[in-house]
Length: 210
Image (tube, rainbow, N blue to C red; front, top):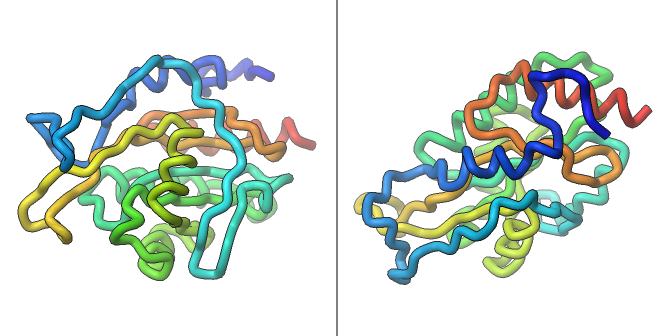
């Protein structure tokens, strides 16, 4: 399904959006080297498939399918990200705050860490609640997180950074994903997208699901 609202990028634009956001990361990495010394692979610009997943929250396991009937606003990052993640979460919070009470009840924002080595579910809960009480922080094993990141086309890798906790930061692609009430990935917005546009896309998906 497409929308006639020109300012809202539709699912058909996802591959174009990926070109704009790949490695809009949290750290400047002139050498491009990760901790293993290997270059991160950046493959084709096809739209990511999306899909169901189960990860851990501070309240227990959570699956994407738990939110069928709701629009899911999904973001990947990590709690000690210095700028990109806080900015994206703040903009997402503004989009949520612009919704009416009934609309907001049909939306669930999720934040998945790309740094499960450092981010506990308790730390994530504290981090995301600072931006909006509806946000849920999710983590898992490195393998579980990598699987979910792969479903959504997220690219990330660790880079050495003096003074950072553990001696590294995480460079990652940055996007806001909107998942329709039927569980399908429908919108992908690059970092810095206006909250007004995100809110309009949420309303579009809510209306389309009635």
